[in-house]
Image (tube, rainbow, N blue to C red; front, side):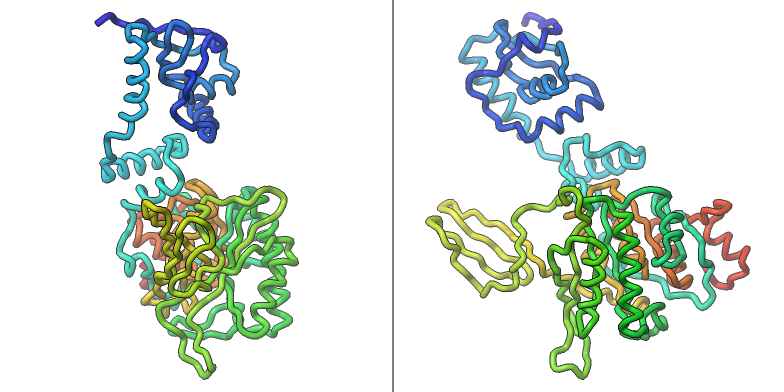
Amino acid sequence: MEKNTLAYWPVERLHACERPLRNNDACVERMVAAIERYGFRVPLLVRADGEVVDGHLRLKAARQLALTSVPVLLVDDLDDAQVRSFRLLVNRSATWATWNEAALSRELAELQTLHVDLSLTGFEPRELDRFLGALALDDEDALDAAPEPPMHPVSRPGDVWLLGGHRLLCGDATLPEAYAALMQGMEADMIWTDPPYNVGYEGKAGKIKNDAMSDQTFAAFLQRVFQRIAAVVRKGGAVYVAHADAGQLGVAFRQAYLQAGLKLASCLIWRKNTGVLSRADYHWQHEPILYGWRPGAPHVWYGDRKQTTVQDAFPAAVREAGEEACWHIMDGERIVRISGRDVRVEVLTGTVFCEAKPQRNADHPTMKPVALIERMLANSSKRGDVVLDPFGGSGSTLMACERQGRICRTMELDPRFADVIVRRWEEATGREALLEEGVRPFAEMALIRGVPHAC
């Protein structure tokens, strides 16, 4: 077989084949980014007249980058029929092999520790979440477990703890100086937070701070907080707020959200596996979550476009209008869409999220399951994004960020629960949290501050 010689041809000499086989216009920007990062490493396969046999996407990217020449290999030893069949082979053979998912997960995890931009590997954000999540903690009970709040906490107001790439401030979410210390000039790409509900709840772990105000004081408290978070989230960044809905509470949360200049798009529902027994006519078995974003730029959305805001409004089965036979069937929180002569099945996700309550939610009475937060992180952020939670609680948002490769900036007013967050992260990861001032480990600070049985 005659050896082909690599050559560099002017881009203007090259042209696409008469019948392009792949629709790739939507992928050009990704190829541009890859070439900018790695260089033009893969030659085009071409004929002597400049027709591209393989490499149409790379050629489009080269033109967008205004490259003057690109590497090519000639395939003129093939006749016309062979060129056409070879073009099919080159495109099809890329789909023959399957991934060794265990090895792929480890490879991606190692690259992540080297601070490689994983978006340049060609995988979609949801694929990266799935493969990297395969190495994370999979035991749901262990995932949602949190240590008991200590009687004598190590944390002090003003402390900033470094938990890997995350930051935790023991501080007040209404104060601008707290955000300055926590964010260090960075903007948040997304907010996910669970403020106090102002219901005076008291569990085994004691009372939640800022949870028993008058209606007017609580409304003013929320307005201050929402103004702070609206100032630090980037334009287009999503803002999720878990909240209570009874009486004036729902009004107070929505008013604060809107008065801060945020766009309120939807109210999502977390449907719990158990209800809350009370003297009410209807026992609460759900919690609402406000969803929207900061206006000023197109809002960020990484989820699919099959999600619906009326999921729980469907009866058991509904025939969709239109010529093609299409049925929607309720399956718990999901809508299964069955359509087409070839029986195409899609699972649609709506505004109702079904996740079991954490078994140990006595640790923090409004503790949210990590899996619930992860689902919203996947829809509104990508790996490496900064997620702010100014009400850290027991650390569920931070744990979701740890699992999903997001960078968490979180705040907790109560030093006891700041300790809970630190210890929960240390126990889950096997790593040490460090106090920013002096860069001392949590265990060492417990000894320095004379805190008994802290670790």
